[in-house]
Image (tube, rainbow, N blue to C red):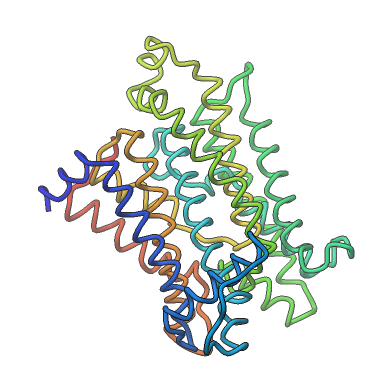
Length: 356
């Protein structure tokens, strides 16, 4: 095992290529697996046919693939699997950023109260009809995103002192704001008269990708790659920050600027993820720790490997969510907690892992 870890650490680029290949296979396999199994060859045919139609106007012929199979692949599973990969990557990137910002091993994307704010906005849209009719189904997504942005702004303003945001104040304010928003959300759900809407709100709060549509994919698709490149550009400053503020300043790191960028990127990634998938915990906490235990604290290696592994992880968790107990579907947030908590304890107890 130690030799395997050293191999990955020494050949990060090749490891990234291998994970990228696994991610591609996971996307195809994730589309094929489900209550109705679809051969991978047909998945490839349908995806190439549809992508060819979109990109060039001409498409490869579909031989022997029923229309119902085409609809399942393209309209139901493809956006769900792609969204799962993007959400997993976004939450993992946010976790890496928050852990570097706070130098706190328990930091994760929801430490800013973003999930609680998003939950409040979504529940208001679901249960009280506080939405714009023109948005239709996107009312819940818009409400969640708006709630997340409100919580970000509130936490940032309350944590900011003397023109700067310190990690300890950010954590304390985030916990308090999260508790306040969660109390509002629970009160609204508890007093809501519509049982069907309450069930919908509860399922959304537990996290899931069952309602994914193609319209949910572009926002994250446009956000995750630039955020990844920005985080990679900050890899060296993040390494310096892990050694302490005084060391980082000595090395020429502008702590205020880096922290402001980290807050913004983390907040936007988490808000966009929660808005389309609900509250999925443990991804941003466990995946960075797991990868860090293999490659060490160097963010030049940690960021790309964590991002790819987070995307793969959530794709397969979602596959489990829809195949473990068909035709019913288990909320993804429940499975991530079932898997993430024991894995985290194993890293701490058995491997004697320490945050660096």
